[in-house]
Image 1 (tube, chains in turn yellow, cyan):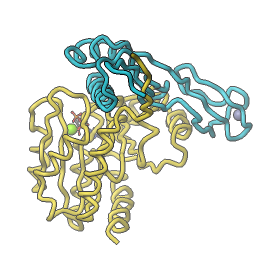
Image 2 (cartoon, helix red, strand yellow):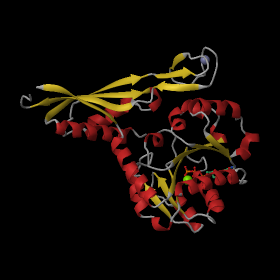
Image 3 (cartoon, chains in turn orange, brown):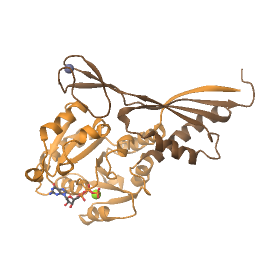
Amino acid sequence: MSNRVTVVENILSANDQVAHLNRKLLDDRKIFSINLMASPGAGKTSFILQTIKALSPSFRIGVLEGDTAPVTIDADKVNAVGIPAVQINTGGDCHLDAIMVSKGLEKLPLEQLDVVIIENVGNLVCPAAFQLGTHINVLIASIPEGDDKPYKYPAIYRGIQVLIINKTDLMPYVNFNMDYFRQGVEMLNPGLVTFPVSCKTGEGIEEWVQWLSAQIQTNRS
Amino acid sequence: MHELSVTEHILNLSLQYAEQHHATRVTDIYLVIGRLSSIVDDSIQFYWDIISQNTLCQGAVLHFERIPAQLLCLDCEYTYEIPADLTPCPSCSSTRIKVLQGEEFYLDSIAIETATEEK
Ligand SMILES: Nc1nc2c(ncn2[C@@H]2O[C@H](COP(=O)(O)OP(=O)(O)OP(=O)(O)O)[C@@H](O)[C@H]2O)c(=O)[nH]1
Ligand SMILES: [Mg+2]
Ligand SMILES: [Zn+2]
């Protein structure tokens, strides 16, 4: 005989459950965590390095570096400035999921950290669907990518708490209509906390780090 | 793209419910997916045919209910659907909008066969 079984469960609920466990692990240690998403080359690693430079006198930082291939280029760059970094090789997957992050966290010296920054795989589609359990999801949009990205990739703009607009130093050389860009963002995520920065000149980094420091403090108390 | 891992999640979730209900075979899978959730259904079917082999779900047919993206204009209260691209309110051009639907991404139900009569 045949019958219909009602499920009504989120397709990625198994991932979300592990994400909850990650969050609990971090909360128990009062560690603030960031999932950093962007397209390839938008400046994720550069932004992490700038953030470390400005933040590390006050807080102890650890980094997880997601990559589709077994390369350690990004993790090496972070290690080179004296910050613990663990490479997560997704084995070809175009995004990190909560289980990969859980395994990566095991390899970080969590007892000695205040902040964990996770560099997701460069991609605007897939990371949006997979929660990692971090306190905030941050998207970096960079000027050379063009001003139409919110219109084309709405899902990733819906699920973030902070937007970084990177490579502002290139504004004079690229046709990027900031009003058009911001209008798309505003439709998808009204009032989104946004920081225009240049990881090349360092402009705007201070404002971001001030905001972040306040979040870390609040999370601790 | 992430369709392979999404397909694996669909398979695991379906198998979990199929086993709970003592299914001998799963014949249909009913998915509800909103337009804003960027999933390509063709490739899910492609991966599905491969990874469901030798499981209770082998041969099960995937059904996709696509929910259009529906927006509400917060200024003039006009409700409209967007086909693909995000657009301001067609009635008053406002960009103050709210997403009413289109982000659905869940397994609604499965159809199974069981060996013995249950209740
Ligand atoms: N002009 C300019 N270049 C930048 C800026 N930020 C990063 N870049 C450059 O952009 C390139 C990519 O930067 P990365 O930090 O490696 O970008 P990513 O997002 O980590 O790249 P993947 O990990 O490969 O996806 C490098 O050549 C950087 O020097 C910026 O603010 N201005
Ligand atoms: Mg990088
Ligand atoms: Zn309107």
